[in-house]
Image: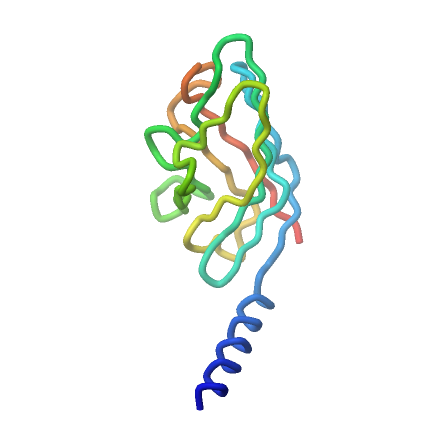
Amino acid sequence: MRKLAFVSALIAAGAAHAADQTYTVTGGQVSVPVGLTVQVKTVIVSDVSTKVRLLASFDSHQTLSVNMNDGENAYLSWGEGEQDRLHMRQITDNKWMRISNGKTMEGDLVFPGVIPPDVKKVSLVFNPGKSGDDTSAPGVTVPLELRQ
């Protein structure tokens, strides 16, 4: 019976994985005056979460580091209200997404929840309400057009 449960769990996991939608991104790159460049490579939507593959580089003459996820969690947005947002799960060993001058970070950001299937334009927002020349936590909004 335990073998059957294990095999069933593997089949269910495979079925969930098969349902993932991988989107290529049009646009997906923004640079802000403080020296931060953010590029989104792909967006993957599963049954329970949305994953964004991100590359961020920081080169500045103004400061030694910046936080990309400072006072408010980064989020994906496709409308005006809270119901049209997915907030990012904080990264365990770098919850502020601090990036040092001269460095590049690459990795997957996880957003619990899913983007509705009919949505084709979203924005990835870091440090909402702040300007792109903020030397501690620059505001960055990356517009994304999702294509299969």
